[in-house]
Length: 246
Image (cartoon, rainbow, N blue to C red; front, side, top):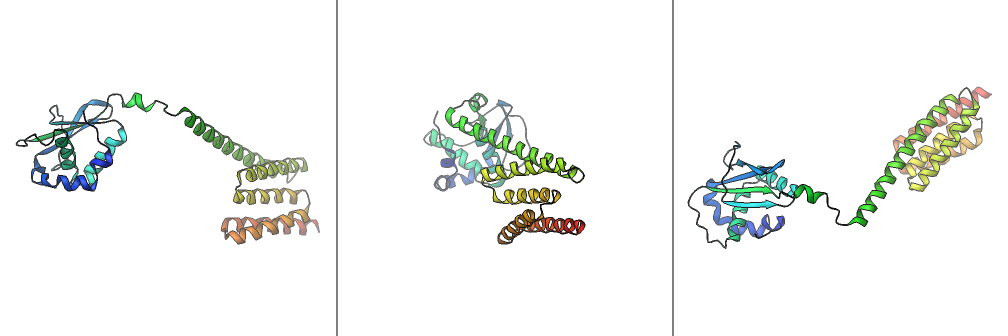
């Protein structure tokens, strides 16, 4: 059994070599195996889209990966030269000694061990690294949502009870620390605005105003409409709280 790379069969050079097979394209039928049963195949002819069971094969092409089989099927739908490229690959295995007189059938199937091979961990250290990165990303995403939801609830309750406003302020600070650790300045800006809202509830207007001015300047430099609108909203809350106190 001779093996070829996918890029070799579907290369420009191989296409030029197979141009001599154009006159016999009407004789070529491609049999695509069933992905759930690799020993079974269905015929796909370039002249029509009808599928029927097939048990005879002129040449056998075995794909080691399911992605390769899918790529061949996709190219058959988009490119007319696929049948002759596959036939050219089969002929090169036989050194071109096979005479083509009757109908040509090419059986494209999956290796029977492709499922088991997909579960083999070839580089365990790399998989450990990927696992640690994805796990950390999940934990950070959950933590961020947890702080946001709980902080929003405490902030809403803080309108009538200052004890909840203090809890909301603490959660906003934790969000700021998380955003700084991730080096996500956009998220950090939003967290600072949440913190400013909590300071407004605690009547710490000077500190809140300083934060709002700083984050408004950052939002303007970034030309981020969402951040600018958030800054304007918090600024309006600050002005309303000041007027209510006066």
